[in-house]
Length: 129
Picture 1 (spheres, helix red, strand yellow):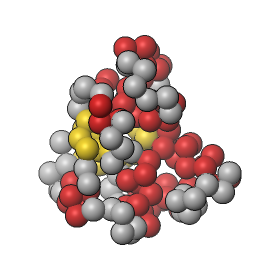
Picture 2 (cartoon, helix red, strand yellow):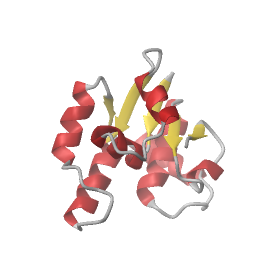
Picture 3 (tube, one colour):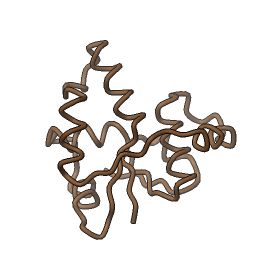
Picture 4 (cartoon, helix red, strand yellow):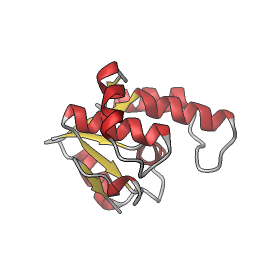
């Protein structure tokens, strides 16, 4: 299964944060799964680090390298993903979360999230805790 974790889960995984649950780790480390990360997540984490937001302590370049070194594949944002935003109901306002939902939907990937608002969308989304 192709798996796309949201930005929080990516950061928790890279930092081995206690917020990363056993379920999350199990899915990401399952050799039957192919883990991806969105370029939008790197973009979001770069912005949040520059703004000194709490909970985003990892240096985005370090995160990027760690993800590649751990077998994650990068998923770039493309126009098809942007067009998929049009079909999303206005449940969530965060543009980064919305593009992840659109990417997962249009690419047939399972989006992993701990965000209950994201999990309200239909489609290939799994709320993990």
